[in-house]
Image 1 (cartoon, rainbow, N blue to C red):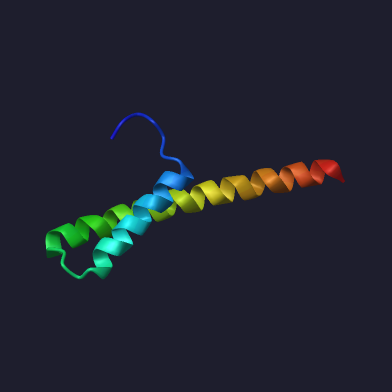
Image 2 (tube, rainbow, N blue to C red):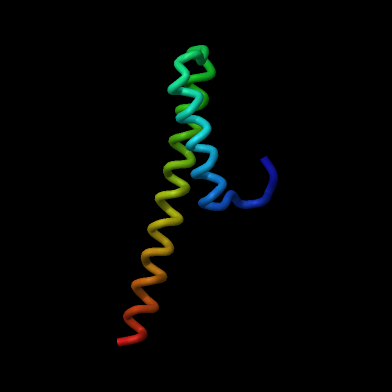
Length: 65
């Protein structure tokens, strides 16, 4: 993977692809394990990004009061 940070949109798209692959039910066990690990990493990344944005929005809204 490059040094470029993944965007939220990229992470969500990759998650959708992983889910589609899993739903096909044709994955080897070893590949399935790797896909689940990658999905877990992406979910954490998305959660962190959403939390950060939520905090930033709250801060901006507080400054408006």
